Amino acid sequence: MNLFDIDDEIAAFFDRAIDPETGEILDGTALDEIERLKSQREQTLFGCAALIKNNNADIESLKEHKRGIDSKIKALTNRVDSVRKYMGYNFKKDEKFKNEFHTIYTMKNSTLIVLAKPEDLPVEYQRILPVETKKKELKADIISGEYSGTGAKIERGFTVAIR
Image (tube, rainbow, N blue to C red; front, side):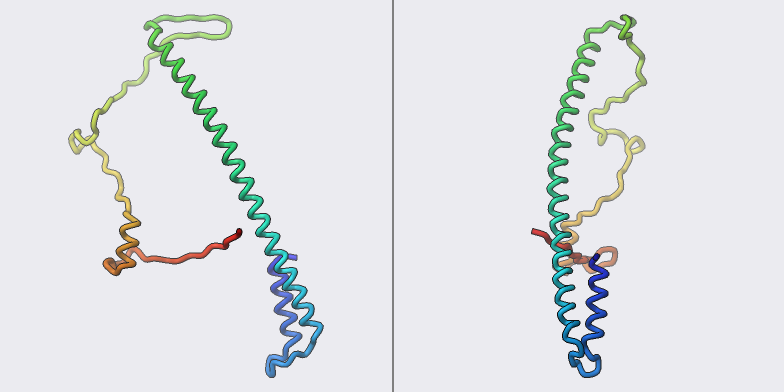
């Protein structure tokens, strides 16, 4: 039974067990059933918490495994780049080698612009990026009362903590 159904049943038993006008207990067995449902609700919540903790542990394990794979990919990529550069330095223009497995030759690449400092270029050759917000400073100013304009406010959310 899910939490919504349990909460609905608890509400229904409360309606049957207690007189809304006087507050008098009409059905003592309904109160026992409410306690049983509260216990079942608690066990369901503990089950949800256990599921979250187990899944978080699996996520961390998979992240660690992914980090290991990512480092292997990076090492192999660096090795390939290094060997490719080695071949590029030792390969002469217009040379060509061929066997049943490989064909090795040079190709012309597209032209590249190499920049020392983009700031030193004239403005017409620069691209201005969008403005970024300084959120830490803005938050401090809102809290201290220095900023009271529109466009920003502080909202407090909540999260479920599981230990």
